[in-house]
Image (cartoon, rainbow, N blue to C red):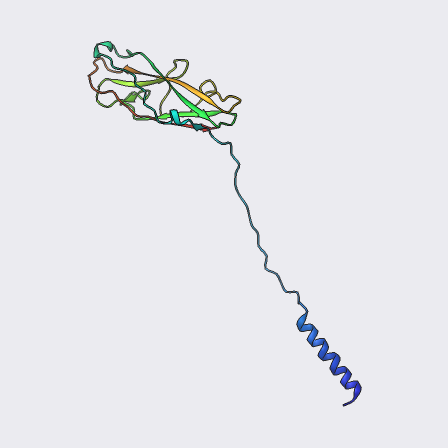
Length: 176
């Protein structure tokens, strides 16, 4: 074979061999990744001592409730909060109300009477609605707060019937 043909053949073979080894650019597949989320203020934790509690309002005779709107003595109770961020909070008490009296909690057996919750200024605390009032939930610099409330019996009928007067309410506190 002619040396020039052999030389061309060797160069061609070498070029083909190198072409197989070298990477070849290809069309890349592309896409988009979208990240979503939200950073929110944390809400408070209810202290373990006040999270689930029983408030004993007391025992009262039916004769105490002579007129519609008569009330028993108030029993103070607190809800302790910790790990709160500074800011405004809402507090809410939910529970079953007697027909026509949404401001009272219905009681178990006694009739004509319900339980009224009061805030720290003796203002009736409405049930089943969010309340945002810095005077009720005031978070200190240490991240704690004490919600001071009261409960009492209040008659809503002229005649109050005797019996157990127990009720249950759930409460929630949220950052607003």
